[in-house]
Length: 310
Image (cartoon, rainbow, N blue to C red; front, side, top):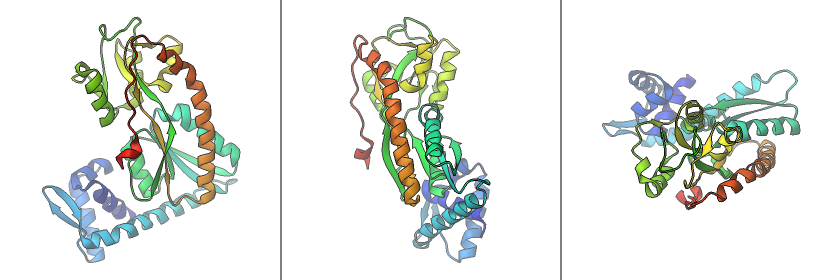
């Protein structure tokens, strides 16, 4: 069976839409339809009920879904197994959002290989949707995300508490003197909290769904934006970015997501090494967050507990 058909089935099942699956798989909608039709012909059953509202799994589709996930897992395991380089005995693939690689991801990778030198490691970067899809498909076994998605077969645990802080590329910035504000998509919880605390910043003429990549845009222009404290620390230290006076801060925790079927020894190794890396990162950011607490007019925003949203 063509593994591409299985991947397409899983994507349509996850999104509930042929159109959404098209966008995630970067193919035409007709290609999505043709793949699902080929799969249905092979199985002799209709897998989706199609309508203008989207695509819903039929009873046969629901029965097939766990087998599709298992087929994909076996395929990825076999593909990774035969691609382990000479001199290595084990393999793991790690994913993370862009802004989580410098402070956590690279150090986690180093710690993993220090603890297990025979471990071959592959790294992926991408949006939460992309990394989650890789986790579901078995391409990635562990990941660091700011906005994890609860899916069957995935375990989500807290990694490191961060904060979104308002910074500008020019000195003496304040809420009353805020130039070139860029609205960054940090998720619905942040948007809701910002609308309550600073409603005049919601309707920005520049909006970006680029995460911490927005930092590079802000640094090189007369601009300002809410960005993760850990990510901007080096620019604050060298004077390329400046804190905006009297601006609130918003909690923005990161999470580690593991596949539930990760072998126990690798799961234990991943958890233990990440915990050590997180402890080091927390110490490194204490000085910055301490400085933020001294900001005049600071008003903390209540934290949103991800687990409460289950």
